[in-house]
Image 1 (spheres, one colour):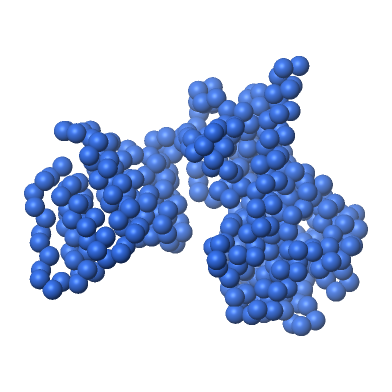
Image 2 (tube, helix red, strand yellow; image 1 turned 135 degrees about the horizontal axis):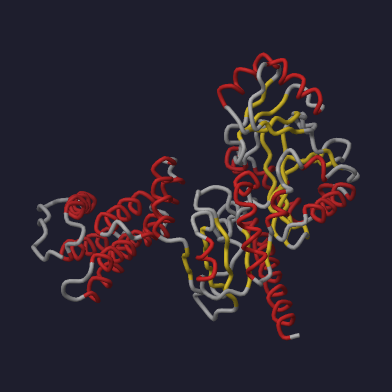
Length: 469
């Protein structure tokens, strides 16, 4: 760590200009404690609370290190700085400082892991994949201790590939639950016996396309672990898009359009046409790559002539599904999301869009007060909004889905049937800003999180009683 004097600010320099000059100096000498102290003062003067907190925590770490600290300790100080920026919603600064931490100690696995998550959110998936791969080659187990009085230790089976994992941050209490994240796709079987102690197992590899190659590995682990397992692999496997119409067949008031999965591209267009006809799939139809959600790669095709070249460009595996026009009488497309916790339905949101690809973030919800008011009515009274027939169908779907945590995206057709878009374990829920325009959703998110906590308590208690019996 260098202690040479930092460059002095020029007279009349603005706070932003001074911070920029210090940032450039720190990029050249990221371990220079004097520069960090100077940056701390500059952040205070500029009223930048996040920047002040980030450099304050780095300085506190440096002060504890003493003379000639190891590279890993120095890198952790920079890692802490980056993490503050990340938690404060400043991804570019976080990416920059995680990079500095890894330059000091390239084997800091957690920095690779966090950097991968940020780069994914920023859209740089190729670089994110490289950091994620490096993280899990270095380390397969990541322990996040409970911040308060620990009530349980939850082992979370993840895939290190960065896709297909159940989003758990909102569902799990940081105060009471110690999270033991295990990248089982990178781990050898001998590592299973070396894991820290845990009470429950949650299979968080929720995308069936991602989980399929790992199914036997996960099943073998869960058979041997001797602990209750939530969302077991066989339940996840049933949620493939092309299997959904089969297990929903016969549910009154439900329409799940026919769907096929192509693992190889047919030899010619005529063969594809026959396969579609045999499956009862008509035009227009939807094509999407496997292992994708949120409309990624999803497109609508009106004919074989438009589909065939697009299929050859996309490649396999992919899904082909009959498209059903679901516009309401007002011309809008509605997509409801209900989350199942221990097979019971809880409303999460309603998105109303002029386009058939319905995303909450692009539906213009904030620009139309009537849309938010309709969403409020749905959240407060889903049965009154959807109708008794639809809610009974939703409840039955939850039982047949048979997941400890899952969800369904759907709409209600004019004849009151539930049109199923997808139902699986990867449904995202998250809290909104407490004083923001979507704060009305938070009490319903809290209900989902409370139900999840209650389920964990019940499973843990049942396992304890079984052990004592």
